[in-house]
Image (cartoon, rainbow, N blue to C red; front, side):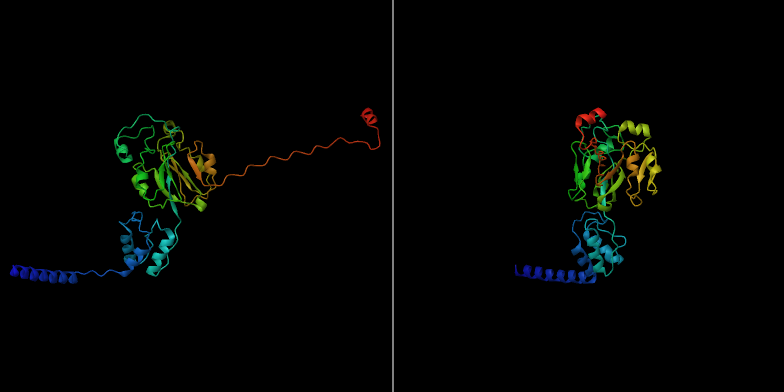
Length: 299
């Protein structure tokens, strides 16, 4: 019994020495700045930055020595300033982004042609057939984007059957964009004071076919592009697209669109024009000192 205990003790000590030697031989020195950057990160580990998590993002920043190609959408410019400070550099501020639903095919505009009775998943539904409406491009309404959002910024509108983005909660991580099999959701510039203009349609069919499938569809008429003086609108494959980096928010395209496919968000309401003031009524002239009956006779 004593011999067994001694042998096990010696064997354990020998293995410990071997492990220590191997660990010392293959030890990898890690830059302490990685830990510092990870501490200032939001810790969401959402993958919106393109990395597996916040630590992988921090490691990439340290290896590159700059933040030119890296950006944390959750923490935004404030977090990137702290990351840059750890690296001893300055970060260039980027315009905030927000998720935008580019489909306005609500139930009244895009009536159902059949009933889906399968698994409640956009990806599964889209892989089986084009959808339960006449539009093969629009939202299929199963809410994969809602499930993918880790910040509670998306919800399904029970009336329209379309996802709704709460821009106050949206971090522009892009998970909803990846989750949508139809490519309905896009990240766009949030715009000054949240104001932005975009085409809420991705239907690439010809005008008549698109209009038949959805009353709110873009028909590719090109009227919006003609009135845009900033070269922000292009029409390709029967579909208009607005480049938010060129758009000056003049809203001329919104007024010109015949189907209402172009949406203007968060603009202040236009002041109601005041009705012109009525002209004052001048009372009839009277002759002082004259008898009222005499004045009537003279008239």
